[in-house]
Length: 81
Image (cartoon, rainbow, N blue to C red):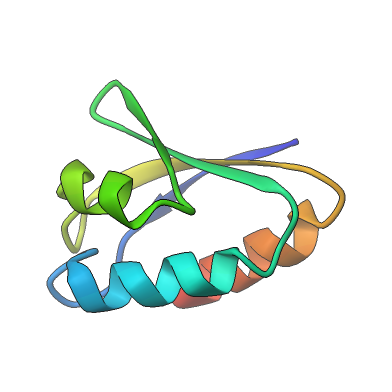
């Protein structure tokens, strides 16, 4: 399992377009991916969950990835966010 903090650098945060792209790309990986933000947990492969989180540029989230391709999933996620 990988658990690390990441600061969001996507301009305007995870609004509809970047959240959709993130979910689409993370769905290629079999690992479970969760974001922890403001004492709540969000499934990073769910567009509705991400939209409800209200994650904005400059905020720090904790990413937890667990599964057989967790290293690859984290590398992609780090470069995207």
